[in-house]
Every structure is written in structure tokens, then in C-alpha cells.
Length: 97
Figure 1 (cartoon, rainbow, N blue to C red):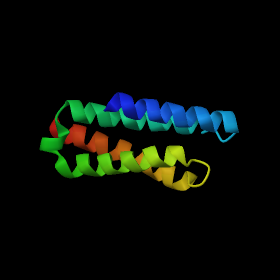
Figure 2 (figure 1 turned 90 degrees about the horizontal axis):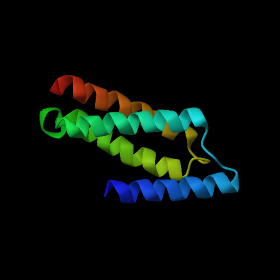
Figure 3 (figure 1 turned 45 degrees about the vertical axis):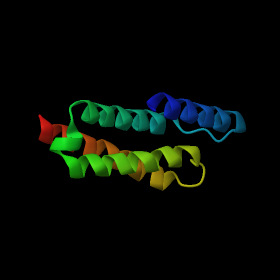
Figure 4 (figure 1 turned 90 degrees about the vertical axis):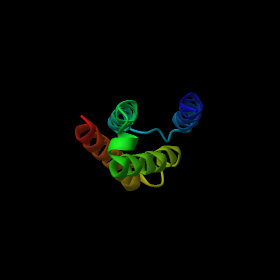
């Protein structure tokens, strides 16, 4: 399922770049860092040992994925989502370790 999401995101980003509505490099780096933190939380089993933080991060990641597709409309929501995903993922990792 992750490959499907990644392909969809890359397709959408490609369309945005070609249309001139590209996400800034800094925002994309922050988005990727948040996704990496969430994947790390998933790999260490945060869903079981920190379910609240994990679920919050998961929900905000889904929201961030949506906002990446509609970047030109809701930049503030995207930044908030990215921040929350990273914060909650790192919090879950800390609880689980």
C-alpha cells in the first residue's frame, strides 16, 4: 500500500510542478522528515505501545497527504499537519523505547 501512496503523491507532485504550483523545497523536506518519523514509529510497534500518539500522527499524515495534493489552497494546514505528524511520531518513538 505504501508504494501506491508514494506513486500517487509523485504523480500529483509532478502535475503541480508542471503547472507551476510546486511545493517549496523546505516544505517538501519537512513533509518527508515527518513521513520518515512516522514510518520509524510504525516499525518499532508504536501502534501498540503508544496508540494515542500513533493514531494522531496517522490521522495528520493522511491530512498532510491530502494537503500536498491541494498545496496551493491550504499552506497553513499543510504546515500544521507536518508539524503534528513529526511531533506525535517522535513522541510515540520515545514512549516505545
